[in-house]
Length: 481
Image (cartoon, one colour):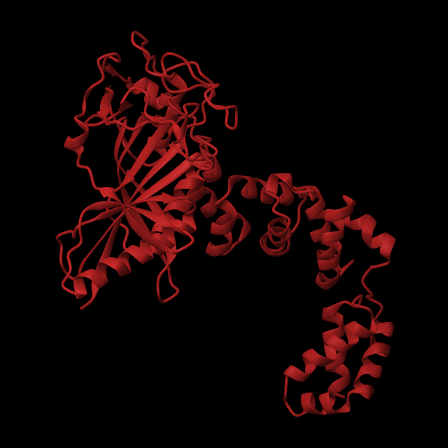
């Protein structure tokens, strides 16, 4: 029996405002507990909420980028439930009239055959709501502490249609969504600070069926990789239950990263369990078309559009363009490099391979790189004009990281300028052929890999300074005479 997974994601993004959704308290992260609070976000009797206009503008901006219908009439609702981190015993959210509904997000991923596939994932809704506080359990024996600094922070909950069919698709969706949010500057999307959180709804059904199976919701997912792994585990758990005559129960489950498995948290609530009703302290209001159009005009070039431009203008492959545009700061870095009139392809290769590898090893983000765009462009230019070889450049880049010096200065200091003197290379090639008669004979017998060995020996003879292209040409000429 084969089964098809059915996956939907609920993503909460903290919107990039300086104050909370319904009061003037700061949203600054990392302050002393309960410092960013007031009667409104603590739910004191008689306090009245006032909507943050900037949060509404950002919500409309995201909805527009996700091709959503922007509601003309807007209202807020009370979502009622009791939990210690919810000071009012209800959360101000949106139920039947969200600010955004009915959009889509196009994702790009590789299928099992390794083919690049494009797919549109429906967006059910993207609505505004306030965040809850945070419970602190660690180091406390007889209870828990509550920090209400986060209570009232503006969130946009983006709910996908159940259109995803694999953990890889879910991962691609999250990568694409995060990129759009960052391009829009809707939020920082830092998962470590709780600025981007994701819950996954997972069910399975027999292949060919159209009716959905019973779903489980997975929480406590603190990275995109955790989402991917948790979904895979849950798919296997549900299939195993069905294959062994068990029954999948609708419930909320938590992901345990250390054990690599989900476990029961509580039975899953339905919408009616929350007793939604209109928020009486926030009257419904209309959003004018002029307001929506004004927001639409502020949309920047989005990742998909930028990737297409990179492919068209710079001759990059689909894959290279996709990697570069997924992080706005990385794409910006790349284009600042190209302002120095260097090869777009060579610059892309060096950024994606050597530069990102160095940044990752030192846990540095692209905007913190000690090698600025003009500096990397200077290194690429030296490779292009044959001043140094790519092999030498790989030694120069780490030195640029450590010293802050330009590639040109380091090459001159260390005497690394590439040897292009034909006579010197011919002498080195002659020595290598004489010292390696078997490899020379193998090449003459048609074994092309022998040439690679001989080229390597010439490079070693010249301390890596010889022009590899010239070395290749001279060796071929000598071996064929």
